[in-house]
Image 1 (cartoon, rainbow, N blue to C red):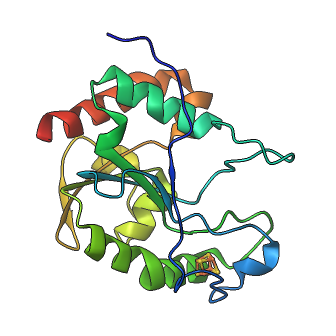
Image 2 (image 1 turned 45 degrees about the horizontal axis):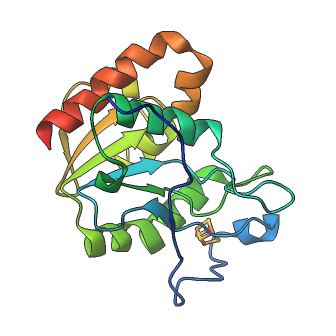
Image 3 (image 1 turned 90 degrees about the horizontal axis):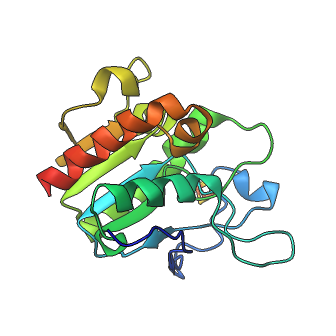
Length: 188
Ligand code: SF4
């Protein structure tokens, strides 16, 4: 196996007609929209709660902990970076308190659902309880109960796992994360 080296996956630019969205009020917090990253034509779409930073304060790009952990696991299960596209429930990173439920619903309905219709991935991998509860439209469910199999969500074959940042903080989750990524690699 080639040695693993995290890289900045190419950003999928926000389309002109979606740019400058002010619908949920999060724009007031000053973070920019990130539409997604990776290959927009990839068979697997990964859904996270919101984008992490792609640039430091000086504007230099870097690979944050979430991306490093995800990319390491992707490499370990034998998937290629070009087989994945990463996007978010919220297209902006919140930095202060906000109306979570309302913002997630508005952003999903306005952007994510149309984006999925357009890109039509073969499989979806939802990471972390926030993304899972939002995408499955059910606040009672969690990763622990759903992981290990595929579920039909809006007609997409969807599986779930832990948020890469949680995996990074709790190394005992890493083998489970690998199990979940192996499930999706095998299905593909
Ligand atoms: S988080 Fe989503 S809905 Fe809210 S302002 Fe940003 S793009 Fe629009």
